Image 1: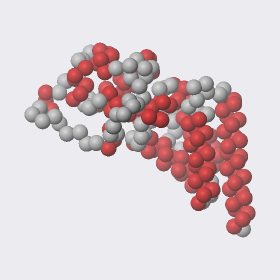
Image 2: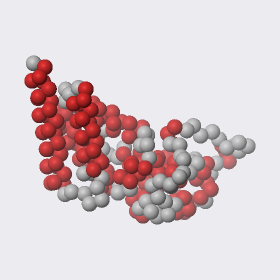
Image 3: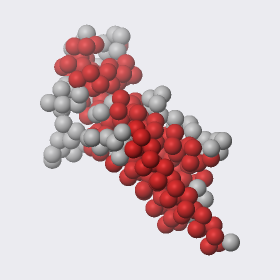
Image 4: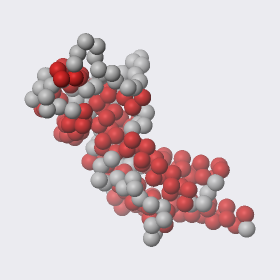
Length: 212
C-alpha cells in the first residue's frame, strides 16, 4: 500500500533533483515506447481508478504492459511519480491558471473561477488533497496556479499585512473547504466563497478609506 508519506523517510522533491542517466547504461537501452509524460498520465489514470492506497509500481507497470523495473529508467521512486501526477492533475482543464485579474468581473470573478476550478480538480481526483499536504507541491503547474492567485490578490489593492491575511484566508478556504473529506455542496461552497470575497472587498474598502 502506498501512503502519502512514510514516517522517518527523508525525500527530495522530484522537481529539485536533476536525474542523470544510470552509470554504465546507454539511453538506447531504455524500454521503447515509454517516456516520463506517458508514465505520469498512466499514474493519474490509475490513481483515479483505484485510489492512493492501492497504487503500486507493479500495478502501474502492468497497465503499461512493461516490467516494474522499466519504470525506473524515468523515475527513482514511487514518490517521484506521485509528485509528477499531483502536478499533472493541478494543470487539468478545470483549473483556469491563466485567468487574468483584469477580466470583466475583476478579481472577484477571477477568484470565483479559480476556486471553483480547484474544487472540481479535487472532486475529480480525490487523491490530490492528501498528496498536496504530503509533498512540497512546487511543480510548474502548481507554480502557475500560485502565480494566478497572486495576480488576483494584487488586484484587490490590499498591501502589507492586509494582503497577507487575505491570501492566507483564500488558501485556507481552498484547502479546507475544497479538500475536506466530506466536501460541502456546490451551493454551500459558492455561498462560503461569496462571504470570503465580501470580506476581502470590505477590507479593501476600509484600507482605501484610510489612505484617502
